[in-house]
Image (cartoon, rainbow, N blue to C red; front, side, top):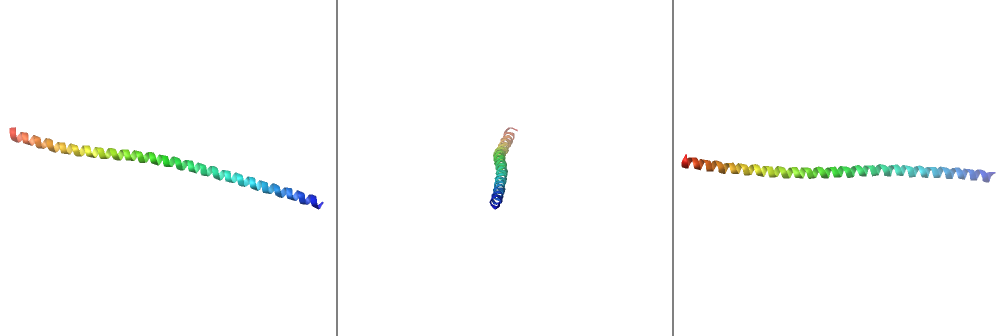
Length: 92
């Protein structure tokens, strides 16, 4: 009788250990799933930042070009004004 009780106890202990092992595996799978989701979100965020950085770079380039065009226009305006003044002084 003692042997049967010991065997039954051992089977129950094995079942508990198996259940604990299975629960741990499920817990690790959940953690892995969460980590994968977090990694995906980080990659999407990184991609979004890269896109925004490229947009800002284009905007910065456009601002620089516009600034240079405005400076050129002021320079042209000065020349035109100087030419106009010369014409008015000469013929005016």
